[in-house]
Length: 508
Image 1 (cartoon, one colour):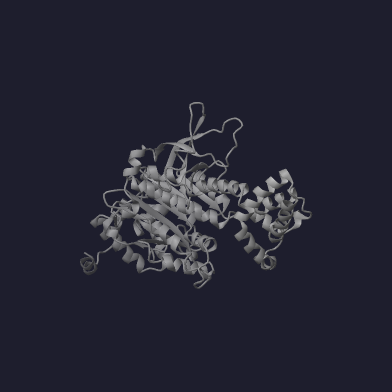
Image 2: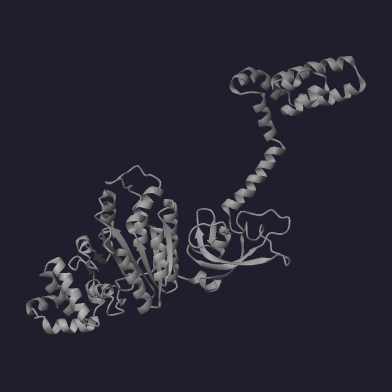
């Protein structure tokens, strides 16, 4: 018998002090009382004690064992209230707690067919509100981020059964509906999604049939992104000459502080919007100053995704991961996407703070596992065979005096196929764009340039290489100001610069 039942039986038999007795003592007292009660021969009490004696006899082996183990249990257990709690847990309270845990376990684990078909019921009287946002899939649940790429109180809950049923992926643009709470109904923290209308602007059948990004074949960039816009915009004209960019490029803009990297990014972004309107532009600002975020939003006609430096490191990683997943989903549909990240160094710092420690620390205090997520971000850039492309241009900080920044840059130095280096000395002399011509370049640039243009550019590089760094960029900027386009500039170089036959034959 349970301890509350033994106490109730002892009180009905008139045993004093039953509420403070332990189980073994209660069994002995009840047995003694029942034996005395049967000897008196009272009618109703005799019948009742007989029935109780029968149940006590059924429990007699365990009762005897409990009586034998009572002294040992006094040393091991804390007090009588703990015993009462444990025994009560076997009753209704345990069942109530189990039902509560099962209810929330269903909400956490979400098996297919468990949530959307049974728990969410939509009737004709329900009011449905339209929602739209970016899908963010976590371990055991998913949310539609309705206010940008960061979590917000207005996010919509999505069950994993619905995610698996419709083949949804992290970064999908979802439109659907949620059910408004009825009058008197308890409001949930996040309204659940009850219907999905479109995924990335298409119906649900197309979402199930799309290819997987990781299974697409990457190639070298072959289609060029022309950045030249106006004769006076020398930044984009210089980049077109010394480090051409193609669709699917993985480029690093290596810059010391105060060298003009933000202006370079803005020029590239505006040039892409002007010359390549078919590309979807995403500017990801991680750990940046709020005023720079505002300036970028007002000066760039594209999607600006930001997490300022006053936010925790977890927000930086959330924004970066969801942004790159969004870009992957667009590439799967055949779109050309350009992602400008500022900066890769600060993203690596954020992962170093937010990621769990592995116990292996590199030079500069960098955790060995903290560099993999930024590499995964940067490595997503590729030109897809018979499909879209994902171009990523990321800035990397150098000469900051931090050993950690140097370690992060060295890890990414050989991963890109294009590099544009800005020089601090040129920036200090107010020479903008402060591009180091010799240190900047693109791998496989012959795939992006016409053969005639390539020969002239190589001839230009030989001339600039023979000069000092400052003299080279000043000569280049002077000649560019005298011409209205790069084509006119290259034709002028071809006419005025003597050709080196031996070198050209070797290059060809």
